[in-house]
Length: 151
Image 1 (tube, rainbow, N blue to C red):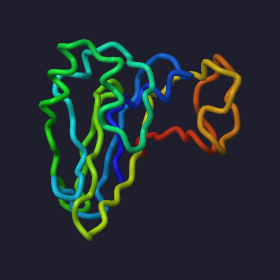
Image 2 (image 1 turned 30 degrees about the horizontal axis):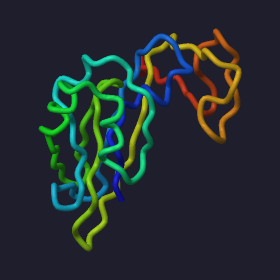
Image 3 (image 1 turned 180 degrees about the horizontal axis):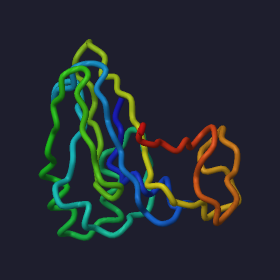
């Protein structure tokens, strides 16, 4: 299905500071025809936009964009990947995936990583199904493991 235009940090604002990175890993070949991820070049320099939804409507974001941003949005950069390849993006980069027009699946795994020291800014769970991290405490534990280099 369609993954509407969005910025990932919109869903992580209960953490501070913004020091996040997303890795989109193709499990199947991702092409323009089957709805590969598309990026809006330069949008990582935009301010954080309000959430307009993740499903279905690629035009809904227009309501929160300036005319200049809307013009940029209409020049997306599709990233076609082979299965197993990945692409990384900044937490403010506007991105989305258009409808799959083929009979083949377009599956991916998305990893969101944060810099060591990013803390919770909310008493609520950061993601559905996870335990709360107390405000001011760094992310860690079962749902937010700290990755370290092997000595």
